[in-house]
Image (cartoon, rainbow, N blue to C red; front, side, top):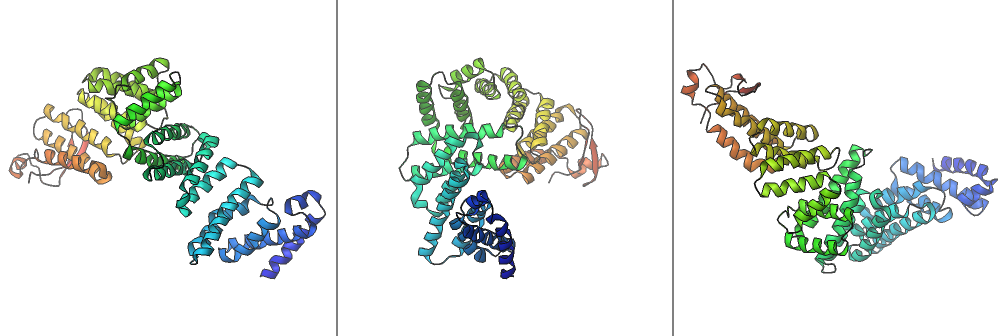
Length: 440
């Protein structure tokens, strides 16, 4: 079979030899062109057969003889060939040479095919994996990649950038102020990527994961006192930078630092300059702290309305629902919760909101209708608990509270109700089916 590969490669090379432009791409001489095309054919055929070890020698020859011939050779090398060989290599000295070769492949790809920011982002991320001792170099490469690529940066690059800085911070080679500044820097690009209406769902998932990774590292080290101090310093240095103010407001909200002295003035400044969902949400949260739920409801609605397609839609809808519930507007709370479930079908907080809204109808009903309300509320709490582990504790508490209001078997007997029977709940504006259960 190898002989047939060589014949095919030679036939293609004979066509290329007569072209000067082809020779520049496939090698400096006619002989190089033959060698190049022959090895391209060999390595590609081995890759189709998942014979990575066999593909290595001809692949390496392609990069030596004709480094500008195929971008795919660099992609295969960095994503499959070298990682596979590195993973399987037992000899540490040879493994180190393979790792160094991986970094060289990234440099060669950038030199021959451009896309420096994209390629260096991948190189920096691999450095964190294969050469953790080169953490400062990895961070510098990643930061420069993001600085050049901005919102075009890959989700993995954005996440790796902060991971590298966090490693430096844990080794006391970076400060908390640097962690804060880099967080603001990265989150601006992450939010810009998430705000792209043409973003594919799969890519959105990757970016959301990157955002979660960055948030998780930042929130471990950041306290509101530190954030407030750093926010104050950054605002003092850039008093007219509205884009920075928007980002800093998002940081304060993300850590729930709504009591910080900088919070309300910052929210008012952003909202006055150009109302955004973030600024409306911030003003609503300030009013929640002051127990002005009516005023908070107005700004929460504004936050939801201004957040058309924005990445924090679920957060705003949930908070709007909770404020509506606190105001006794349970129908509106349920409406907000249903909008959340259209986005995240397994969101436990939304299901809890609906359960609470259902349970609130019990006071308007008499037995046996009021029992049906508690059975139905129990259903929603149980569903929340089964779908979303984050609400397990409070869902269990609400389930117990609802179960305590179930009828006894003797009470239900007088209404011709038997355990497990399906019934329709049709009071307080409800019209849903549930199952008869008795108090234990």
